[in-house]
Length: 624
Image 1 (cartoon, one colour):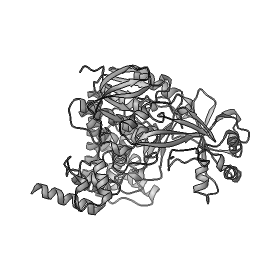
Image 2 (cartoon, rainbow, N blue to C red):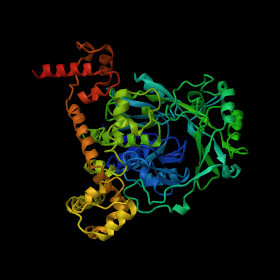
Image 3 (cartoon, one colour):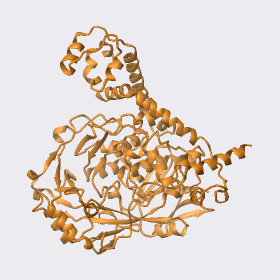
Image 4 (spheres, helix red, strand yellow):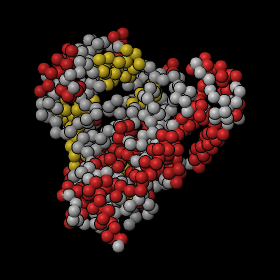
């Protein structure tokens, strides 16, 4: 069969962008089909990239050869480091983006990518032969064939906008909904979920009294998501955000009008995100809280619009006006765009294997919110992994599966495939048991080798990474081998700052391991580093590796135990439904998910240690 394309990607959101770009980068002829070019990488909710755990995912996407971090670094409104008071395992970047410039920059970049074609259209069916997906059928009945299809439909599939008792068939920002594909997927025998998310009001800047809010600046450091970025938006040109709180009057208005909201009025079918609830949900679930924090964040340098972060709601418009006017500084606020809830169809992710391919239909992959996740960053991470694996399957190569100790993306995929979800899944640092290994600073150290192996990055980029690692290793070797003798300047510094001196004969690395000593502040006391050209980023990398060496070794040891379980492969043809000793729930879950290893089986929701013992006994019998 002669195919029109190697890969077709359906949907131009953050997942679709990463999937289509990486497929083209890997040399595959790729088609990206989207409803509207102007909404490529659209940000219908908060125009920000990064945040807790999410910021690390953006760096992982970049390390794998993705787009998000590079574009996010071009023209951000504000960049900051989060969780600076905590350890390196949870520190990450967050950037307030320009809602107009970011999508424009993404589209401009995509148009320059070799092997990548873009068309506007609506996919309503899939072309299937012998249970294998071979292409798509558009609403105008046009058939386009391919070796693989990646669905990245976001929140558009059979989507409804809800405001009070008003329900409109539409996608985010009032765009066209994707109609037709969802019923077709159901006819294929796939299980669908109905999910919900929402977004708050946009407020006219000139109508806000900022004197009643606390100003929130970005960080002064030169920060970037991408390892290839070398230009930065000056701190003086960045825009501030503002912190305010709900008032007793806000809570009173919400309580009095609860039944008018789409959620509490019974108009919503979908399940909303636990970790990003609407303001009415916060008031009900956290009734003991006297107030909730909200952020006023600029949306663009080109508009007069501010995003009211934390005030998502599905209340009627007249109630929303009262709610907004009850907030400090917003007593005379003009609402440019009212808040709304949106519900949409997604696929039960337990139907995927760890490559994000639908198990029943080889050649069909999914990424982004159709997988039951939430957030731009989660979508981008899933998109790049679906793209890489689709290309590897086309080339008849082994799949690329990230482990839980290798990337937050690996944690996410392992979670949704093995545990499933009945609400929009959000990445949190608490979901990663090896988060000291999955730091923001070392995404390239974890993933660049894979990106180079699969042809996702150039030779020059990989060589630059190897040179960086060579510098780090040489510097750490010097720190471990250099014993500090008489050093008057260092002694003076230690006594003046910490009221104590160092013990002569200790190594530089042992000095740095003291929790209060920073490598960046003492490096100039050692001539050994004069021959190095160490950037502030490299100095931070070195300090973390030295200071947390013991903890890092312990987590690596724990991760090895998990890898041993993942190396015990389960045969594909096991009859779980009739296996003696397994609990009924275990039989059903194992038969549905068909885990590849004992390790994966142990992480499936509802599988108990006794069930794993039965599986091990079965494998031992098979060996005998």
